[in-house]
Image (cartoon, rainbow, N blue to C red):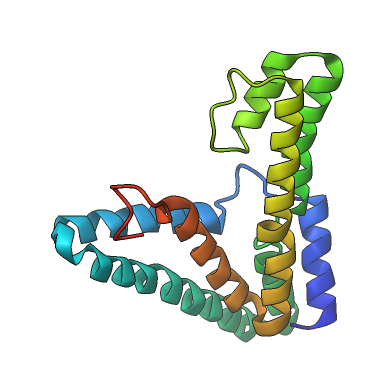
Amino acid sequence: MTPTIFLGAYIIDIIVGDPCWFPHPVAIIGRWTRFVEGKIRAHTTRASEKKGGIILWFSVVIPTFFITCGIIKISFFIGALFGIIMTALLASLTLAARSLYEESRVVIVALTRGDMEAARKGLSMIVGRDTESLDEAEILRAVIETVSENLSDGIVAPMLYLTVGGVPLAMAYKAVNTLDSMVGYRNARYRDIG
């Protein structure tokens, strides 16, 4: 990953973010995860779900890595400038600086206006817990916690992986992160497969 592509990716993320009309790789990875999980669950017993979890990991992470490699190779085959642009675009999709800012800002602006209902609704879009009964201090605490966590997951870690292994490794990290958020729970449903 060249410094120019790295900087370009960051600028694209800051300016464009994650437009809702564009099919985001994490959403595609999420749909693929649900599909593969369903197939594994249909063909495994409760006792063999740990093996199914390993198959799930390999079925999601490895294709993500190699599909990203393929897209980049094809892009550079088409032309050097096209390859640079596509690499920067794909790299920007591993970052979440703008979306993290925008989503947390919605909650803070609502709190500033004194609109607790809008603050709770905005918060429910970025946290996995029930927000209906939270007071202002609890909402602020939840925003700070989620921004802190997502600063690592959505900015720092992808930048590290972009630096170490380029876009394919950063996309593989996003696949692992997506798996964690979808099946990485210690409950009856996911204890073994996740």
